[in-house]
Length: 260
Image (cartoon, rainbow, N blue to C red; front, side):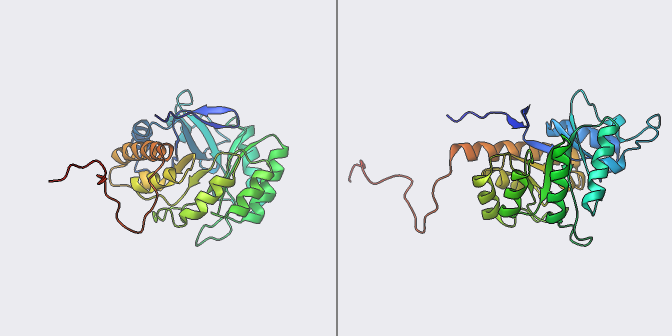
């Protein structure tokens, strides 16, 4: 029987392989309930959504129990390497974390990452002792370069942000996983539980999602579904699926059958 181990990133262990976001929920109260239902231990929050100047004012952080969740600041909304680096520094200086989900967007319409700028920002932040988790395209070469630059994990997209299209290039995810020496977290594009399960069955070490839960008709129930899907997909990967066949293969072999 296959037994699982914890997800380890930069020496820190997580029992849950589901990472969730904090945006787009109907209310902060529903967000809190969804987080609880998900079983997630890591929650990502956009640095730009946090009031870093006046912490006396109620903010998103007041709804996040830092004793229960590991907070992962992200640089959402940044379109240049300089802007992303500056945002990561602001988050650390404000006491959020030296970890960062690094995003450098290259196109306003598609929200695809700018891999050249992403690599540049990764190199700078790694030198400044950040734990960098870069969000990138499902490009094995880009992921390899980011790992070589010191990324603690790589986070290839499954599909465009918020699209809900599911895993568009499963073979690319598998290639990335097979080549990587750091955790691979599928980020963006998940629409429903089966998408999360597929990502895990491909060998991903975890899945990060926001819109699929926050935008669901019932975010709390969807969070529970995603938790179960990630666990099921992980177990299926560990178990090892049967090979694909072009023709039928009898589930009850003819050998040993008693003739009539």
